Amino acid sequence: MLTAEASRAVAELGHVDVVIGIPSFNNARTIGHVVRAAQGGLAKYFPQLRSVIINSDGGSKDGTRDAVLKASIEDPRLLLLNTPLLPVHRISLPYHGIPGKGSAFRMIFAMARQLGAQACAVLDADLRSVTPEWIDLLLRPILYAGYDFVAPYY
Image 1 (cartoon, helix red, strand yellow):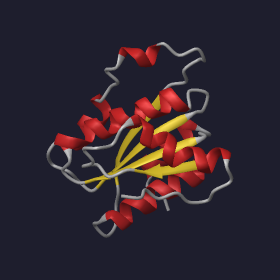
Image 2: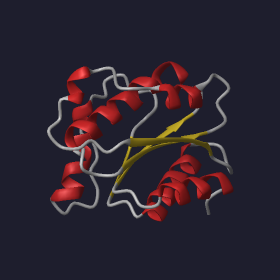
Image 3: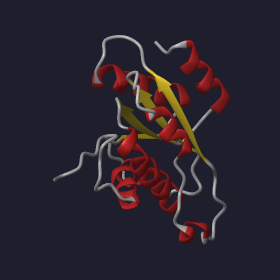
């Protein structure tokens, strides 16, 4: 079940094609990079799809939620796309319930279901190696090749 704040966010967005979920707890130093990589991947590989990045935060006290909302793409090459670029919406919400990633994931998946998303990818908030290409590698098999689940191979 979604919180009132999450339900309002779903109602405002309506339908989306893709959800990128980022669970977090005190990740202000690293989450901006993850959000920018996700935005860049969505803009570069899926510009025609309606997308949202959902940060499900466990009550961070270090400004993590602000870092999510302030993150922006700094690569000017991403503006040279031939197709219209749909905006990537960003939402940062606290989750309620038992602390931990399980509660954060439940909120992300519940919102993806309510939004009617065709695909949902989840990224750790402290990834330093994530690039925009990861978004393509995680989502393309689900969106265009009939896969139900994709996991990275390290």
